[in-house]
Length: 236
Image (tube, rainbow, N blue to C red; front, side, top):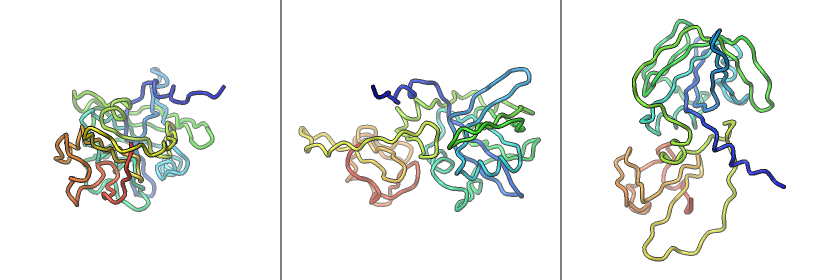
């Protein structure tokens, strides 16, 4: 009997930015598989894809930071750190950050709390490495509510990057017959999987609920990865 991998969506996750440095360069990425392992000494575990630049930086420096993102964090921040590569983009160019005690950048924009960790062990998990870090410093930045991964998916309309441990390829359904009753079609970004739902619009970009995809401004772009309208296809 085939297993239903959607069961993993019922597990509780947060949304974080994990950052590190190497040879004076900074990089960070969105991660959802970060969790506390022990309280004494305090340790956290971060699951990072081996193909990601952040993985390379953590292995080199043996240090990383975790920024806990707020529920109100905008999609373009998640898109910058989750769907763009530090090999081609300086992710820290236009965000607020500070250097912690480990001299590793800590993203402060829309951050609820942060932790700094030194790697004390790592476990090979095939496509990913589990970096086990001992906390050397941590702080609460604001009293905002942290974002959960369920909220990111269900309310924000976000998807998992292909390198995320929770990524699950969604099967394409046959194109449905035209909707009746004037119902507007959803459109999906072919780059990152974001679904534009006309009923919700894109309030963060000033697009009101009830705006059909065809009526979006020509310069509107995907709120996650920045793809233009030509990169969207009907269905969602």
